[in-house]
Image 1: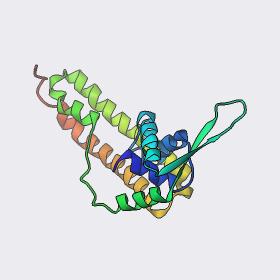
Image 2 (image 1 turned 180 degrees about the horizontal axis):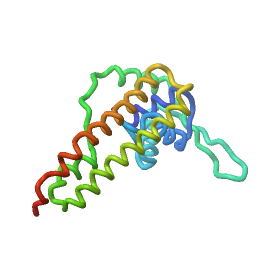
Image 3 (image 1 turned 135 degrees about the vertical axis):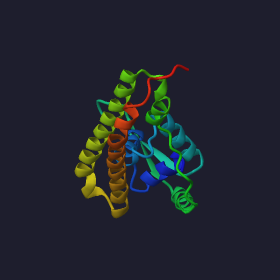
Length: 178
């Protein structure tokens, strides 16, 4: 699913600014799909050109004016149509796994530091996810709750896997040079 479709989904809940949309990405689906302002604003322009959203400038005193975007009926229909398409296989991009994949090119100390860093990062992400879930869960429907619980389960499983496999990796032969 592309950024434009997800933005339409967020706007189906009500009008939002570009900042609000970025927050919605970060605070709801950011673990499995995030977007930068550099992706959001061009997508909003394209959606406006296609007639799927409208924008309204809200005058604010003492600060810059705010642009609020609203979904149109054509945008609602495009969103409904897109979410009915078949699910594509997930595309996993993981900096962590790429660095572990090439871990043999590191010294034993660097390997240990890398794996410990990976474990700490996953624990931190789990802690943040649990905090956010607790804070926001009263606003979730059952499908949103499912996604958050999936995320937390995924992080817990990743941590358990790292804890189980790290000792064996760290007992390997010294690093080879490439």
